[in-house]
Amino acid sequence: MKKILYTAIAAIVVFSFGCSKDDDDNPADPSGSYTVNYKNQNLQGMINGEAWEYILGESNTSDGGYNTDYTHNFNIVDTAQSDSCFILSGERSKVIFSLYDDLKVLSVGKYLLSFDISTFEGRTVTLVDWTETTVLNTIATEGEYEIISVDTISQIITGRMDAHADNKNFVNGNFTIKYCYWQ
Image (tube, rainbow, N blue to C red):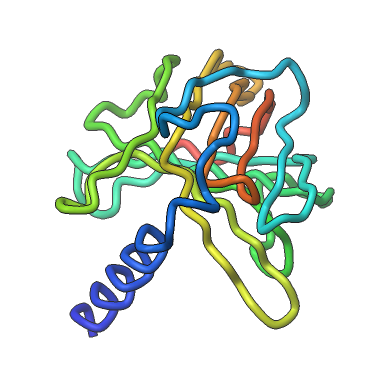
């Protein structure tokens, strides 16, 4: 079963990166190298060609059963809910990303996006377009996100992001989300 899952993930990644770059290049930068430019606005952009703006977000931590494989997970959505620590995943577009470390502390800092197709390693942001009939995950590999503050008393994280996949899939701006689960 694991081999099937890994094969499916590899096929999705290869398909995502195997498309022609002619339509995906940033017209403001014909050289193909992306320059991070944070906008002072709520996190917003386009997901699968549709306008998107964040309303609510949450983060949690997990160790995946290994003390050295510690993950901070982020889930930012475009709809309001009554409980920001229990974001329902179905039928909404969202931005998801993770930070991995062997410390059990979420650190402030800047995190550059990149991905090496030959090793399947790097840091990415996933832009999820979820409709009634389909789910499309687009991987943003250009840009950066920054964790600006982590308030452990009120459990609030502030940050900003400039993540770019192509001209139909990108987000840029500031976010404030709830840190819901400390493991």
